[in-house]
Length: 441
Image (cartoon, rainbow, N blue to C red):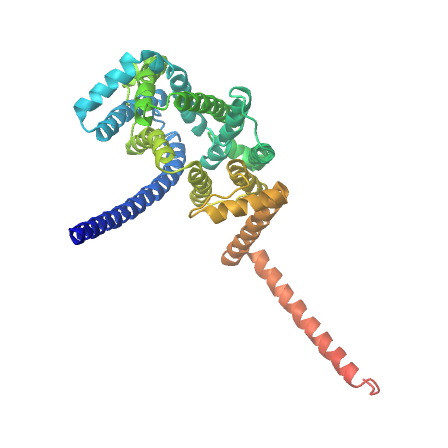
């Protein structure tokens, strides 16, 4: 009898061990899948940020034949229309079917209507922000827009302090100062690059010159202000009512954003009545609208499956990618001051988001490096990045000069060659004199 119990116990322990091994294997597989999803989302976020700025800038260039540009208000409305069914589909996937999704929508939106009403404020902010996006990209380059839009970090931090009462660390205040200096340097550089008669003539025919740049900067700053307030307000609501999914929150936002976007369309009614709502819509414009619709959902997915650290890296990489594509498109080399402003903005992103303690994981060593850099001071970051960028710019400039020699350059090279030969002869004569000091020349 005792042996039977022992055998049963052994069989039970073996069964539990097999279950534990299977559970561990399933957990490892799930962890790999989660990591794959996480980094895939980061790559998509980088591409979305860069492509949205680049394509939107190109889509706001007036047609060569003098045709009508598409209406930004209509683009905002279409993006909201696209986003709503996507959110409903994601809810249905999470809850297990359309019927369960409809029950969730009824419960979370209509039964708990007070919670839904709280989304009216950020919905208005996001709607106006999207409208200002097209105003800004009509007057700024894609890279300048990306850099100026990082001012939303400054406004978000200020709202955190004064609206939520959360203090900032000294490192974060340094980062905000660095951010302000960086975007200011970029703006000063762009203004200086437009000086001179030839540049003024070119600027007169450009949509990003003179007062247009001021309007673009004002639009992106207003957009960043609205974004900062909406982000803080949205975070406060989400953290106090955590039982509502992020996709349901997007549906609540969409219910208020749709009528607000429709109200913006009314302002363009004369053009719509004369030429139709989709005037100027091309394949490029549809791509921009789709990217705008997916942008908010992608950020929500990154927050859900990844974390703010990876989102920070994605933002920095997107800025650099946009900058590189812009240089290729315009076939121009940036000034050193512009590169310094770019380095300052990217450095401020890392400084603001990283505390002194590094988190474990694939990017832990980068966080530790960022913390060390913070202790050394923001000035070292800027100087180091500026030196690297200056070296790269000098190397590229020398390569360009070597590939495209001018007549003056050829003559100068010839003169240097003649001078070199003369100096070589003088050194040879001097060497003979040193070897034979007593011999008459």
